[in-house]
Amino acid sequence: MIDLHTHSNASDGQYSPSELMAIAAENKITAIALTDHDTVAGVNEARAAANRLGLKFFAGIEISAEFPKGTMHILGYNIDINNPELIKACEWSSNQRLERGERIFKFLESKNILLTRESVSKYAAGEALGRPHFARAMIDAGYVGTVSEAFDKYLDTPEFKDAAKRRKLSPEESIKLILNANGIPVLAHPISLKADENTLDDIVKTLISYGLAGMECYHSKHTPEMTDKYIKIAEKNNLFITAGSDFHGEKVKPNTTLGAAESLKFLEALEK
Ligand code: AMP
Ligand code: ZN
Ligand code: FE
Ligand code: FE
Image 1 (cartoon, rainbow, N blue to C red):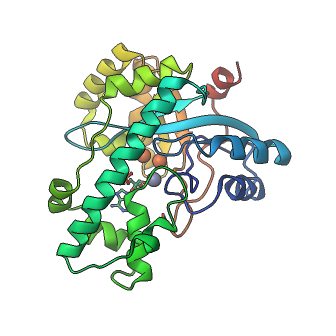
Image 2: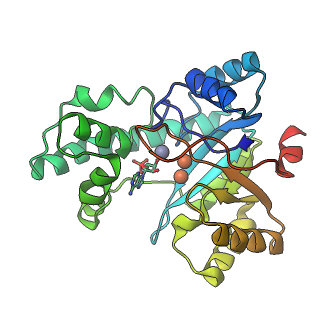
């Protein structure tokens, strides 16, 4: 099995990059990409661990792009992690996330949820402070029982969005950033765009005009029917078909395991 969408504790995953690669090897994954949110800080450690374990490894990133209606994430594969513009953009995102973090503390305080900075930062080892770090601190402090309860009640509500928006790159900037770092841009989990088939086709065509090269048709949140629909749209638009679990570890995303497809033609492009 292969898996081209995984998260480590360099962003909001549970496991360190080395631990993640060890779990992948135990689960008979043969090729894997690390795609942390808005950071490549885990890539070197993951690559070294994957090499020791005999896993094929691809450097990746998952960039959050501005998209009014749903959530747009752009994956970048085989990126040059030393590219200066990429590094600058990651630093910018990191600062946006820290600044939003302060507003999240305030928002939660207004709901009588009092968290110490330390209870959140102990889960945020890297530069990409995210909502799952808050959700885990809320569980520890007994305010909620699960991560999804934290999101449903507090972190994914319209009120939260008003109070704790963060600035993101535009879709065009995200794609160009990846291309400029010699990477391959791929639209992550199209389900999160909340678009019908025709709208998705329009969105994809616009993204292709910026340089999009692939679409993540296989994803843990897609039903088999959705996957078929996304494959159809990808093929029609000459996009690579990619696959990822979006594994974050059981404590962050229960019920998601590593492994997203048996094999993919896209691997040939990645190995070039
Ligand atoms: P952020 O980077 O702060 O926007 O947080 C994004 C992360 O939160 C992603 O890893 C998502 O998988 C996770 N997430 C978003 N919505 C939910 C939800 N309703 N339940 C659980 N996790 C979620
Ligand atoms: Zn995440
Ligand atoms: Fe995502
Ligand atoms: Fe992800």
